[in-house]
Length: 485
Image (tube, rainbow, N blue to C red; front, side, top):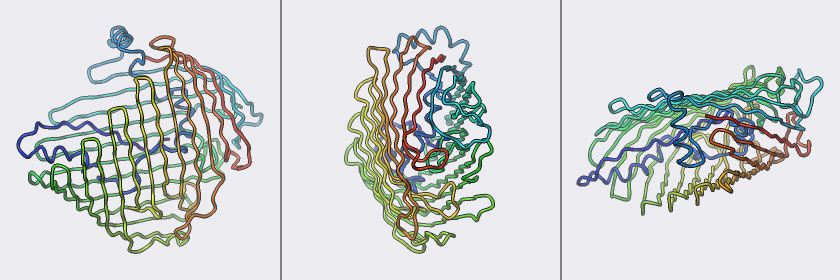
């Protein structure tokens, strides 16, 4: 399941009165550093591959709005609102059925006579809640989807009903001096993990919070913290990669000064830990503490820079990759450029927190027209392995996706990606694996507000579920009919 992503909550800005508008105008820039003790969140090939079956069939992404314009949306509201909306609580759902082919290979125990194709059924349900109580804004959502292949020997099924669930709760409180934010995410599901090289059950939980207090017109202090855990296991009794749980803790205290209407700086002290538990194997812990100064500069409303420099201490229990232990310099530079509401570019480079090598992310989103979308992410990230207790991992790659609507009802999508993983030993990469790559194309016909016909073709090359790097090309194709409300 997906790593936790935290949506940005819209800020309610007070009117510009006197010099008070200075700290308000700089608020988005100064917040960029809170809790960001490593590379910024970016889409990865690993996550796209893990989620591909669920997203292709909209199993846990039931539509909440019509994509055909205001007329269809108005029709939908008039017919369904009284059945699906109860004040701040709304329900949406869907049902997808179709046929799928795959030549992937699995080691699962109950596939004695594996078949290459199967019909499937995939129902889904989404519930959302939005309410304002005094100075508190509360939001929550829960989605669940089931993907059932009618042939129990189909290579993609494991003979079971696979379930995907996601949950999210957000809290925001803002008044004259105090701002409180909290975001909690949880998810579970089954997908193909390219690092483990096999089908994987994954359960993820995450929490981010911050409390800020406005001391004076130009000074602010606060605390922030985060927690996350990811548990990986192999379904169907096969256990070639073992069960692993990774934990992440981080906390910080900070003091902000809004120097001018374009410049602010932050003094920050933070500490945290990344821990790995492989059951009977030894654990691997990376702990750190650091003090940094961050400078935020926004020359225009469309461009913002955040740079940091400081000293940190890092300690790792395993001896195979501890060259970054002890006192070290930590730094980062991030840039956000939004030339228009249709385009955004985010760039990050640095080494902070528990990272043992510099990290890099670039995210580009381009939305030139109503039904045209292009997304690009390029990344280099470090972290603990999810299958080997003594291993730190370096992942680098890119992910590109393009979506376009033609003739009012015809949707086309094209996506592809490339990722290479390697071990980090004594501060350098080793044991590089063969890269994993994929390409996918989709075609959909929106028959009406609620009914659509879809065709998906996906081909990939890399480690398969037998753990073989020389498995050749793997292909998955499907045709499906989706009903959503």
